[in-house]
Image 1 (cartoon, one colour):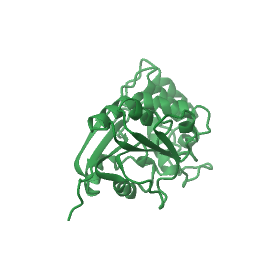
Image 2: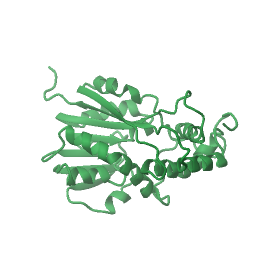
Image 3: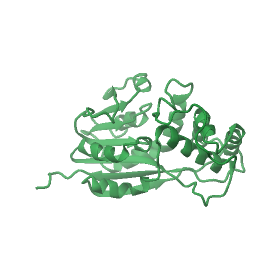
Image 4: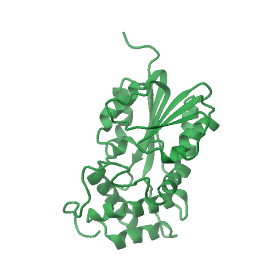
Length: 278
């Protein structure tokens, strides 16, 4: 590793937000970066949502919808009735209008955010970037109609302190620290998802983890390379990795020498009781 961390340094704000301080939608290639994540995870997500019953007649809420790949596949594959796709910037959602999909530009953390109740409420890689994640779990549970399901996915870290030191582990640890410093990203709590959903009075709670293989040229490897490039300033500001280290990590991902575990995606779900407790 490079120099030990002594504050973030530079002019990186410590109270920023996703889409403002880092991963701005107007940044060149941001939609392609998001879609690389979709190529990695959408099949897993759609299989889970359909196994939970998402299908004809369902009205769905997709939060942090990004480019809308999950929303559109709910309509085309699961044949749900409609999807309200919410994001703080909907330029990627409105670029390709789809029957049954309504794009709503909104801040889900705002006190007045209340779009109604839905049989499916889904958010992927959203709550981990919110400082108010605990409150949001409770809030999102209120948007689930009786008999409906809340499905939440976030990253779960496998690059622990005991993982072998590689260019990859150095930079991905610096990335997590940089995102925590700037926008409050925190994935330390996500293993507790089942208990958190149960604490929100949901029932039949369960969870699963998917870890995509890091292979040269694969969507997940390209996703991490582009993510590090887009968050380069934030990473370097931690002083845990410098510019040459970021470049070395990107080369490592595309090398046959790459031998590492990607962060996994934990998906947890819980059902709203059909009738309120007496």
